[in-house]
Image (cartoon, rainbow, N blue to C red):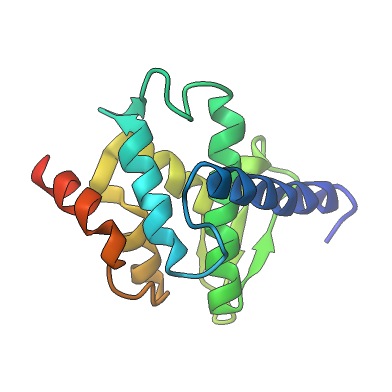
Length: 156
C-alpha cells in the first residue's frame, strides 16, 4: 500500500463511522451487524424514488459525499463479516468510487458502486440481495420491518 492510498482508506473508515452515527440519529439501525443492512435498505426505500434522491430527503443534499459514506458503511459491514480488506487503486481517476473489498479467495466487490446502482436501479439492485449474494448472512427480515417491507414490495 502506498502513502497515497492511506488517506483514502482513512476516509472510508471515517465516512462509515460518520454515516453510522447519522443513520442511528435518524432512527436506523447501524450497529455494523449484517442485520443492519435491512435498515440500510429501508433508508434507500424511504429516500430514493425513480432512480434519484427524493426531494427533501436525506440524500437530496451533498449526495456524492453521502453516497460515498453509505457505500463505506456497506463495505465495512461486508468486510468485517467476510474477513475482507479494502483495496484502493491510487492510479484510478476516481478511487473513492473504485474502492473495493477483496476477500481471502481473491474476489472483489465494489460497495460504493453498489450504492450507486441501488439508487439508479431501485430494488432490483437491493442492498440485502447484494450482501446475501456475497455470502453475508443478514438474517430474517426484522419483525419491526415487516410494515415498510410489505409496503415497498407492493410498489413493484
